[in-house]
Image (tube, rainbow, N blue to C red; front, top):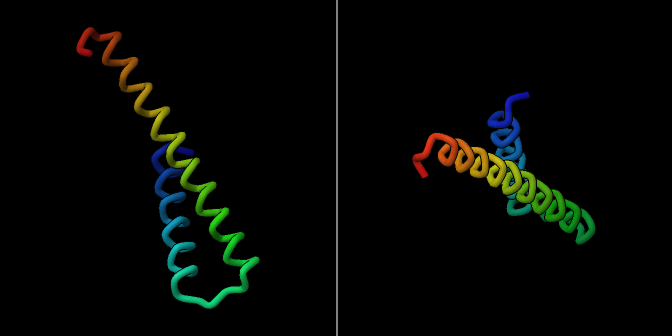
Length: 66
């Protein structure tokens, strides 16, 4: 699966969880679980972004542009 597709799906899931948290009255346990999932998605997105930035930096260094 393409990395950009994974990021897009993670962002979409994050927004859906955020919408659920805002629009529904949830038990504390359920709300905590959803907040945990949002945090995991944030870490995934951040990690993939950092990897993409590192690859761009590598390419730039290899071509002598950076």
